[in-house]
Image (cartoon, rainbow over all chains, first blue to last red):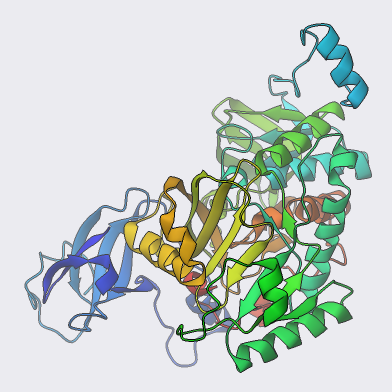
Length: 101
Length: 417
């Protein structure tokens, strides 16, 4: 069982959350090239080790969060609000340690 | 040594002291015509068909662990070809035909058992979809049979057939030629047959890098030194992204963990493969008597060969809903395998932008049943430097071109295929 710390609700079981995939992919600007869109929609680093990803606290506060997790050990290093519009330090989670929030 | 009834009798009479190793354990040479990275079923099958059908015998299969220690030994051994879309249907049916002659071809009993695969349906809409699929299968020359409730009762008498359950069974789509095979025997059989044709199988040899000159591969760096190669085929599903990272390429693949389970051994209960229609659950009974079953992915990127409890609960709940008597059994073993989940749920068997490097991956859940067919078309692709008619649609470029083969129709959500 993964135990994920929601920045708003505290540490909860993984089955309260829904997985949203790699958080490092960047949506191309309007008018982006075919290659940029191809990369955005289809290709992934799929790294073995530290992985920054989105989860939604679906059966909780429904907020989207960013989680840094190891894909080999499943260890979770860090969680933070995913919204770019929140001021730093929003939520009660740990510091973001360089995670883009 | 040729295996036969006669060889059994001879060995029995001489105290079984004359059996030889099934394959050699050679030191790697400095250079090979073809190197296959990955000594699972697909890599071994590729080497076998390269040697047997294309006369290319200067081949090495490099395996970082031991033969069949990856996903070949971590699946639920189901074989079927009940696909809807034409590229899948043709490819998996070709694989099915290879299965039907595989034990004789390899001179090794892979225990292929055509006990049938039955997909249950529970609503009128699901029945329509099953009829659609069954008709598509017939048009592609694949066997399919639509069963009503009585037909299902005959095949699987222990299901919950009550009418007051939330999702009553109303029928099923069966592929009678589907079934199971002994997964370890498939790896061992291909290894032995490839070895006897001159292929070097090199275990405990991890590929750590790929040496290149421009867009041409020169060979591979391994834990046992550099090995040169004219062509390199990659068949490491689960870890394809990691190997292609060595040449700076990102793939349309995510790695996810899929669990499977075996109960204690019991007397014969299920003599077919059966899947639940209102959840993801599939079950069969092994020849040892254990019920082998599985369900959904855990759902998040993972290279861990183990899964977590919520998925276990979810899978078992589906199973007990379909077949309540399962609740009485104890589970003996549980394991996880790392799946290459491609972005459209379909494999990639293809040339790559690098001249003499070939990719066989993206198998999602479906790798085991494809083993002979996958090796067969991958060997052709390497030998001729072009795709065979059967894998011409399984390209790496199809994502960029928009010509996806999305059997389930869920789009670029690898954890949903």
